[in-house]
Length: 335
Ligand code: SAM
Ligand code: SF4
Image (tube, rainbow, N blue to C red; front, side):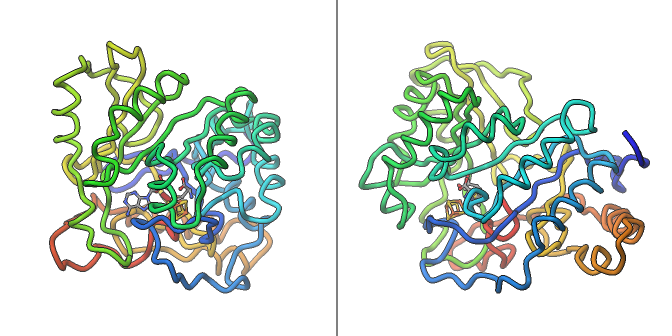
């Protein structure tokens, strides 16, 4: 494509090809492991405009990013988001971008699925931790399950490939995992489990929530044949094929199995801060160079400088009374 620049390669030889963009820190849910109920959000004036977000994404694509994932907060609650998605979609099909996708809580999918497909989005990750209505309301505090189920139906009908992401929570959905997997595979969805990560202050003790996926896998293996497969989506999940359901099951295990050695991603927040690692505090401000000139030279230099500082990995620890490893919430950096 035009303006093609040298690829971004970090000090450990990893090529950065994947950008996750948190387009808003706001959300229509208040999941217990993600947010405190009473959250203070960024003042609107601190946010990059949608045009600025688009400009930054374009610079990253020119510098070698091939996969963009929009996240948040809840990406689909940001006003005007579809316009950004449509514009970013123009970089697909020969414009340098291989994939445009998003992670969503599913609450707005009934409204937007068709438009997403029209914009070139082929796959979405939908976060869903339980199929039990009462439990869903407990976990998400403000969310309601039927709304998400309607959204999923619309997404399926529109032709989106769907991956269900569930955070494994001790005593909460621990005993529902098998049922959820059966359901997801029956619907033709991939199903991925995630370990809770110590990000941001929440109202509860994370030790009470943490469920190692090694234990979940052992339990599943008592009833199912799981075989490792090389399937990759560019993310950190490792996949197995489940013989009995014919479906794919993914494990994202930042706590029990560190996947930093193959990390190919960086994360941009809605204020233009670039985090080179989800689990470290070091960050680069891209908003200032973006606003300093109409050209992209300064921001491109700031990105190069940031990539040269990408750390080797995170050091997450969950222990009783331990402070979060990083103080910002997942909804700030984007999951
Ligand atoms: N609102 C959207 C959603 O829920 O899919 C996108 C943003 S959300 C922060 C992205 C993902 O991060 C969700 O799958 C959520 O379950 C996960 N998440 C949030 N806080 C987490 C934590 N402390 N540990 C592990 N996963 C977390
Ligand atoms: Fe919102 Fe997603 Fe965080 Fe839940 S996990 S509070 S849906 S941002």
